[in-house]
Each structure stands twice: as C-alpha cells, then as structure tokens.
Image 1: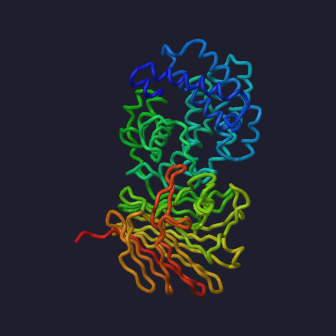
Image 2: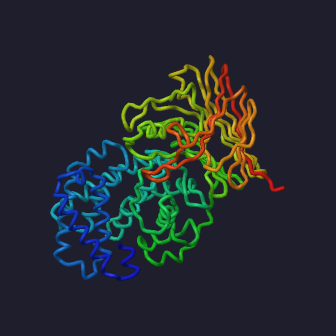
Image 3: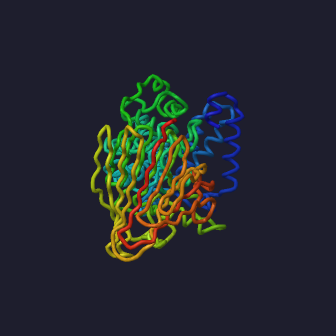
Length: 506
C-alpha cells in the first residue's frame, strides 16, 4: 500500500492502512493472544508500521489521533520485546536479530518515549553480538538457509541505514559481516532468474517487499547490500532497483554496475562450494557442522543451466504438515537431497521438530579450478555411527568447454548394503535409455543426465509421492517434480557414475 500511495498519491491506500491498524488493535489487546506471542513477529510488525507511518505521513488519513494510537502500541511492542529478548538470543537464530532491530527502530524514531534509551542499548548490543556470531567468517549463515540468509540481510540493511540517518551509526564490524554475507549470497544467485538453491528451511519470510520481483528472486537484496558497501550495483537496472530507491534515494540509479562476476568459490566454514562452468553452474555441500543442523543434505549437489534448476533441492514446505506428516519429514531428510542413502536409513535422527543429531562431519579433499577444468572432491562420515567405517566420497569433474559434468560417487566400507542415489529433476524429465546398469533421461534445454552403477540397478521415477517427486518453492505450496531413484545392492565398496551434459545440435 505504501508503494501504491507513492506511485498514485491516492489517499485510499493510507486510509486502508489505518483502518487495518485500528481493526488489528481492536482484536489484539496488548500482550494477549497469539499475535503477541512471538517477539520476532512483533518486531517485524513494528518495522512495517513505522514504514507505513512515514510513507503515509502527508496523507489526510494520517491524523494526530491515529499517530498517537500507533506510537502507543509501538511502545508496548518494544517493551514486550525487551522483556523477553533473552529467549530469542537463546535460540541462536534470526529471531534475536529481528527483535533487536525492532527495538532499535522504535528507539531511534521515537527517542522521546520513556523506554527509548533502554531499548536502544539492548537492541544495539544484541544486534552487534548476534550478527558477529551468526555470520560465519566466509559469509555463510548459521541457519544454513538461503531464505533466512536474506531475512538476516534485510534486517541488517534496515538497521544500518536507519542508524546512519539518525547519526548513530552501527559498527564497521557489523557492516563488514553484512558485506561478507552479501558476497556469499551473490555467488549463490542464478544470474538468469535471481533464484538461489532451495537450501534449508524456507518459511516464506520477506521482510522488505519493496519491489515487483518474484519472492524467489534474491537479486534485490544483493543489489542493496552491494550499494551499501561500495556505492555500486551488482546487476544492471531493473525491478530489483526499487529497494535502492526506498533505502538510499534516487541517486542510486546512477550508480555504476560492478565488473565483479561470479566465480568458482568456496565457503568452507559453512560448507558451500560453487563451481562455475560454461553454460551451467553448481553448488555442492560439504560441511562439518558447528551449529544446529537444518536439513540432511550431505554432499548434496545443485546444478543450474541456462536458468533451469536441473538438479534441485526439494525445499521444506511447512513447519507442520497435519494432513501428511510423512511428507514434511521427507523434505528435511536425506532422501529429498541429491546424494546417496544407505539401506534406506538416515544418518541423523530427529530429536525435536528443529533438531537433528548427531552433527555430521565432512572433509574436502581438493578443489582445483582452471579455465578448462574444475575438479572437486569431498567426503562425509555421517553414516559411520550407524555403519562403522562407512564413508561416502563424491568427486565432481567439469569439462568446461564441452559443458560436461561428471559426478563419481563411491561408498567405502564393509558388508552388503543397499545404496540409493537420488537426483531430483524438473517435472519434464523423460527417460530415454534403460538397461541393467544404466539409465538416461532427457532434461530441459537439451541437457541429458545418465547414471551408471558398478552392479545391476533398479530404477524408479517418483512423482507426487510422499517419498519422492515433490518440491516446495513457496511456503505451504508443493508441486510435482520427478525424482530419479537408482538402487544398487552390492558388497562394498560400491560406486555410481553420473554424467550431465549439453547435447550438441545435429
């Protein structure tokens, strides 16, 4: 509504906001009911209301009585957050950052309020400490989620800009952490679509919806953070620039576009590696966790070609799936990722809705990059507790000029086991070859995937099943895809070879 009012000047948008605000207050008495229960929700509501207050300031609908009513509720919300923020800090996630920004927002904009100095002190301290702790040295994020990574960046963009405009700037150390996190995300964003791998929890959060881009487009936040750090843009002009106008002003439209491009890159603390080919790029996970595990995505490989996510992560769907709990559990599991499952068992066990144990370990063997060839190899040891001595090693070799990606998976150990290699593919994938130990499928844009095993294989193409063939791109929504499940029963060591390549026109 603020964007529509700025575009049209029509007071109906301001009036609609104030009517909704008054309705909400009438149905949600202070500190009663579910809409006061979550401190982070309270903080995000504070940010939205403050944005609306200033966006509609000159509208006839914005009367003195309405302003007083809003400021009173903002004060109540700040006190609610300040008295309970220790709980958010104990969760070690983005809740503490959001709540700190909520406190800082109210304190900076309304310093005349009785609690403003206290809220400011708490908000600044928690924000600085939590960003320092939650953003790793390599720019990756403690929650291992691209969506939560963006949420954190939106919170920090708002806080840094607001503090600077009020002559109380935040620390250079915080700004440096935000810059690291932005550069990490830049390497993860597909330049054709603005999408990132659907990695980790995705609850639909979008703190600053200030543009007409799709929810899945991460370019607006990258654009804004790049400008914050260097007064330059990461991408050419487009819808993604509207955030710049709101946060920094019209001079941003003249900012130069950086010549820094995406490269093969490593973020070893978070365990993310990007491999940049000719017409395709990939992200592979190889992580030793030092914070809570999100999804069981050990050695997961995401592959993107010409704007299409050929090998994909299935997402997370909903926090709780009352009508199909097996689907909700599946999407977090190892089966919903592009990796190998041993004997149909998970290497980790859920001990609560958001906790998986034990924290797995992994090791990078090598990562070599040249203009002609990329060679990456890593191993994980998560199955070792269940099957002592079992190690999964994945080697990825990219022939850059030929657009050929070779993925060699080997499982070392002892005994007879069932190994299941899963690749989650676009819904249009079609099988074109099948024999005793080989399967080939046609993918979009002329790409092909072929899997071979060291022994006879069973093959399934799963679609729209609780154990495969779904992805969730938006919270609460699922759609069918095709999951290639290749099963080999063998005496270890066992191996699979997967090749993905672009067919040349005849």
